[in-house]
Image (cartoon, rainbow, N blue to C red):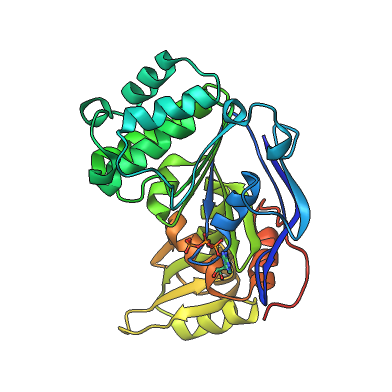
Length: 321
Ligand SMILES: Nc1ncnc2c1ncn2[C@@H]1O[C@H](COP(=O)(O)OP(=O)(O)OP(=O)(O)O)[C@@H](O)[C@H]1O
């Protein structure tokens, strides 16, 4: 379990992380999504005790990272810019780490096997591809058989087979009851891997909810409707507070409506006495939801989604620059 409470990090005039509060629970894969510079890596570094918070706190399995006596067996991490001596072999690197943490060499063999590094374990790390480097980083994270895993962009640089491998690994580790927190900017990948997502933008939490709720909150609010009476329907819908995002461009009576779900649009059409030839909720993906969440003013989007669905925003108020 990872618990952040009012966690902040300020670098000079940049507020990288702005008072975030969230809990990452065991038994599920939690995705950490956000555009570049959103504060994901900074948050993960604070979880791992590599950056000192400017405010608030974060604990792993009930304690700050630095207060764990054997942190490697408590939490394993893959963070960006991992420093590995390029002249060392992967196995030597893992054995050195294992030795300093009192772990048996047998565990090194296990993680080499688990991460598919068998064929390159005796090669120098300096010659590794990005993908092999990622696998080695994941091997390090798994070395202490930790209850909690923090993986920053674990699929970065992996080929499709590697991406699939990370997905299965993350799901298996969560199914074993571990806490799995992984960041990505690949929305589609996250939709397939994560059960729950925390979306961050400009250092603030934009959504903290099960993946399906984030997607539903967006899809519920976009509907395609086709009618022989578009102008009557349009004014009735606008009167009810909807926005017509795509007007009847090809003059076949098709409108795209946001702000109301399909049921509400159907009822308004009935009241207005307009026939409908089509009424289709627009299927959304996590990518749509994510783009919508991160596109606009933070507070508006957070409140809006919370009102539309069961998403509980962690951010409250505050002026966004
Ligand atoms: N050591 C540092 N010194 C100064 N500013 C920093 C430092 N680390 C991060 N920042 C700034 O803090 C903000 C958040 O950066 P962070 O790397 O946490 O974002 P991110 O979500 O991980 O983005 P990315 O996906 O690009 O890695 C950015 O504006 C970044 O420039």
